[in-house]
Length: 322
Image 1 (tube, rainbow, N blue to C red):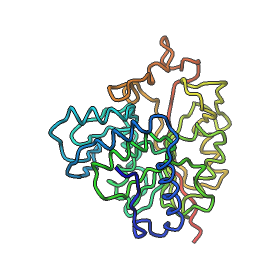
Image 2: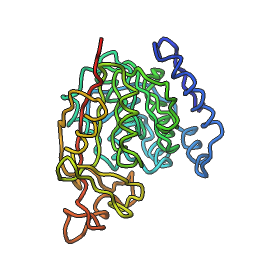
Image 3: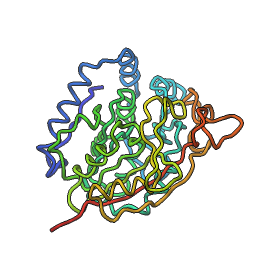
């Protein structure tokens, strides 16, 4: 399987001059990967059987490809791309029960976002592209996902193998720091599960504001704590066993930050604790998960003694001055 992005300039539209160099950069990374497991992942992709290519969206489980006869062999090939984090997915008839019930997050936000019909969308920290398929199902014309994890990009190519030739959901092996400062003009930008991993949350919010067109929307999902508009948690070391967690604000503090940066029409549309049913170990993600990150005697606390994970979805816009 060639790891390329055969996207026409017509599909990229007004963003062609800005996005085309990113596609070239992504293909160069995939041609010269720097990961010890890349050959194993590529072999799993190369051995995927041919199938009638079909997409079935607008449902909790993103279903791609017709059901293949040898389900056990296909499952073994897809297991070569373990662990699967975002889903649920069904590829060629094999149900992939991922670590996250990402469909629950989508259900919490889909009725609150502006209509995606015909939009060009950026999905930052997109993982294997699960949400991108949901965005296409909601009418988006083009979804550009970025995630520096090569494994997730390889999982995306497995999905694309079953989806067919409509390459409007892209997953590029890039981080937000790889995007040029001149890049702008997206109708919608999603940043879900990213903010708390950034050393400078203010800089990240500034980037989101820059990336959308005037009148465009940002959908931000992140960890929060209870508290007033001046409060944020800065873990001493790890948070819920994660090393790279820097700032966890209260939802009120987050709204305050976004107001200071010029966002308008800021709405917290959902806030809830992360349950053990939403994030858990499965056959497709056999490592430890949320349960092992909580205090065994008090599930309201992480094993470090911090408040247990709680997440907010915030939707905001860039002022349209026209």
